[in-house]
Length: 380
Ligand SMILES: *Cc1c(COP(=O)(O)O)cnc(C)c1O
Image 1 (cartoon, rainbow, N blue to C red):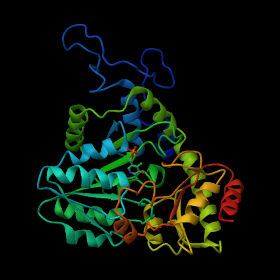
Image 2 (image 1 turned 90 degrees about the horizontal axis):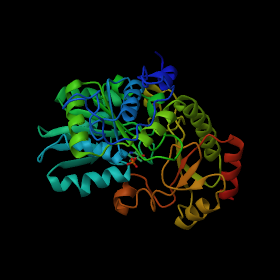
Image 3 (image 1 turned 30 degrees about the vertical axis):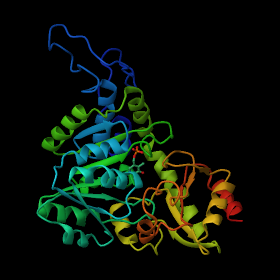
Image 4 (image 1 turned 90 degrees about the vertical axis):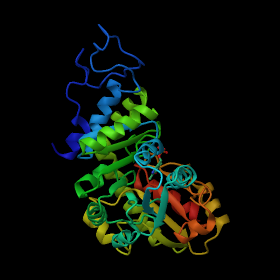
């Protein structure tokens, strides 16, 4: 089965044995009747498993070319489950421009449990190796990164991980499996904030993990059930529905992302434009190698780097909505320094390029002309 077919049918055989409904029903139930103790039909209690969630988990496994999918109550709950594979004394090597919430989870929670984190620049994937010690158990990457759109060579990172017997986890939220399939490039584990492109309609918060290895899947399933941050049936239904149009939406996100990146690049007030499809992007060649197209996330700065001007720009937007989050059909604009990345100290964030004038756009699937017109008037 090829990708577009998988988004619609992957893992969806016989999801409703009762009536053959085309979409799996929303099994809004906490428990399941048993004929005799232990005599159930595959489900006992909805933290441990729910048929609607299972349908989604099978779809997730299919679109990421994995074998096992797990759905969580949020993207951060999914990352939290991965970190629970570790023990005090273990080390993690991660990127220095992580999603702010992931950075907060690592440094404000897991650090106190005795896990050590190294945050490094990974534009040269070979640099990862320098930070690997005998205690390193996990390499955690995002590509493209948020919000600087840095690209990390997944295949090169996977080679280093294999050589040292370390797990490689990839947050694939920005790229989606339509553009990039990390498991095929050697990663052990793929994570999503399904809140973003997989759900695709800004109406649900959810997280996902996909793996190929049975032993790793069993450990994660144990954590999912034991810690209990599971996705509910209604949300599972919504994300499953979202996935069915993932390929169509992401194609348009990419087309509009390109138009917006090109418009901004030629605007006199704009300084830098960060979009991996631009030939002047430092890792454009790696992006071309591992991604099918370049996505709808575009960041930029203005020449005078003024905080007031950045704030006034986002306030003037009419088609773009000023909001946290990304990946929905509607275009959103964010100001990372005061919104998504406010939990990262100013010196830390400026080192990685999150300066006061940085604006991050999640370019939606509206008409390109309307989006450009809106940016033009707001840049004024
Ligand atoms: C949103 C996001 C997360 C966190 O996911 P939630 O669903 O908000 O918990 C993690 N990584 C990236 C790249 C994100 O954009």
